[in-house]
Each structure stands twice: as structure tokens, then as C-alpha cells.
Amino acid sequence: MRLRLGLDIGGTKMEAAILATHPRGNEVLARERVPTQREDGFESVYKRMLQLILAVLNQNGTSMNDLAGIGVGLPGAVNPQTRQMVNGNTAIFVGQDLATLLSHSLDFSGPIAVANDANCFALAEAILGVGLKHAKEVGASPEQLTSIGVILGTGVGGGLINHGRAMEGTHGGAGEIGHTQLDPNGTKCFCGRQGCAETLLSGRGLETWYAARFGDPLFAMQIFDRAEMLDKNAMEAVQIYRNYLDQFMLNLINFFDPDYIVLGGGVSLQLAIYHGLEDRVWKQTFIPNTKPRIYQNILGDSGGVIGAALLVP
Image 1 (cartoon, rainbow, N blue to C red):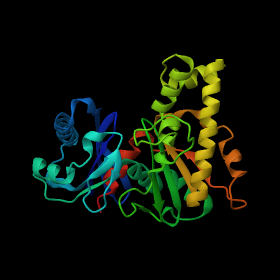
Image 2 (cartoon, rainbow, N blue to C red):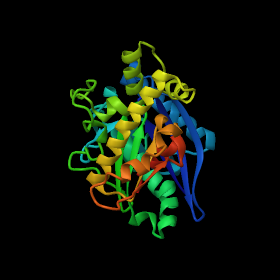
Image 3 (tube, rainbow, N blue to C red):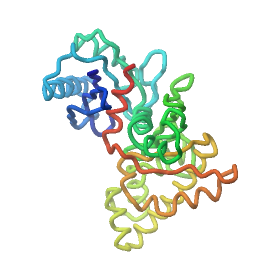
């Protein structure tokens, strides 16, 4: 049995898990999560990260020597050469050499892989989640398919999977789809541009737009709940959200021509965003009869940490 430790570092939470690979397949043996509390600064967050790793090891009685390696998913673009985060909405991790820090702190000499968290999510769904389902439907293996994993959560990110491998790009920026522009007159993004998908399709973006429009600060989930109860303001907000999502999905399909797209993150749990989505998008694709499926994720909010573990070769 081969053990790999995955660490998913997000803007809201951090999660660690031990993934076991054996002849019967893959199995998560232990999981732990804690709030990131990024406002406390990097040193404080890093201490909690170490405590989290030790907690998940103790939960299963695993030692560092038992691990084949550690995989880390970070909330931003990761340079393929330095393995450091170069940009993202959680600035405390930018420029931090986590692989070296963890190796020293944990006295671990095995491989430590670092990647964008959206790549981790997309990889996990391609290999162990939606990819298995779709491959069975079309009579292929998951490794033969091309897919896009899209996170609609605190921010918006994406991972591009081609034949079982995540595409990183020359500088680690492949899949930074959250910073494609959907509305040139939209809300200003932290990247400096206006109307990025990040500002329009993230949960935080929806909340900001709703509060500015109606003067009523609500969480994204509350907006969707009110829309289901036929609240006029919430219904307008959800319809505008769906219009932007249609445009976003169409852009991704025309850019990358995937076999399927899988959605993750907190907003992906809202069933309202899927109603009629495929039909509306399929009617507008540039290549006739292009009909990639758009799925809700299967692995839930642990897809990122499972994908992080899968980074270990």
C-alpha cells in the first residue's frame, strides 16, 4: 500500500488528507481541516499548517517515514520551475517556498509537489471523479479525455487536464480563467482589471454585486435560497449570474474544446445554475454539434486535497 499526503490550502480553509493506493484502488484514510485565517499572516498560518499535518498523521497512526510524498495545492498560479506561488487572491503565500519549508520543518526527504489548487481539483475529478463516469458513458478511459475543472468558490479558478495530466503553461498561468473578462464595465478585480469572471461568478463576487445593487448584504447561498422562494431581487441576481455563467462556459468550450467541464466550489452546489445550462451553451458553440457535458463535481469539497495527493508521482 502506497501512502501520499495531500494538503489543500485555500483562502477560507486548509485541509489535509492521507490517500492510500492499493490493488483495489484509492482510499482516503484520514482527513482534517481548519480555517485558514489568512488575516493572521503567513507565519501564523504556516504554524497551523504544520499542526494540521501532524493531526492527520496522528489520526491514522501514520509517520512521515510512511509517506511516498506530499502534494500541496495553493490558491494561485504556481511557477513550474520554482514551485512558488506568483499571484493569487491570498497574497500571503506569494513567493513562499513551501516545499523547502515543509521539508525542513517536518524533516522529510521525500518528494514535495506544489501546484495550483484548481489543477488539483481538476486532476482529482478527471482521475477519480467525474472523469470515470464520463469515460464509461463514451466508452473511453479517463486518460484519453480532455477536461476543464472550474472552481466557483471564494474566487474563480480552473484546471486544464489533457490526457490525465494538468497543463501548467510556461509560467504556471494555464487555467487562470478567473481573470478572463466578461464585462469591461464590471466590478474592479484585485488583478487590476474590470469585470473578470472572479468578480462576477465567485460567491464573494455575487455577494458584493447584490449588496451594491440592493443595499442588502447576504451570503451567496442566501441569495439562491431567496430566488427559490421567488424573491424578485434575488431572482434578478441569479438570472444575471446565469447569463455570465453561460458566456463563461461558452468561452471555455471555444478556447479549449474539452470532452467535459466539471464545476466545483461552494456555488457549484446550487442546482439553479445548471438548469438549461448545457442546452443554452451548446446552441452557441463555434464548431457545430459540439456538446461537452457540464457536470457538478462528484468528490465534493475534498477534490482539491485528493488531487494534491495525486501530484506525488
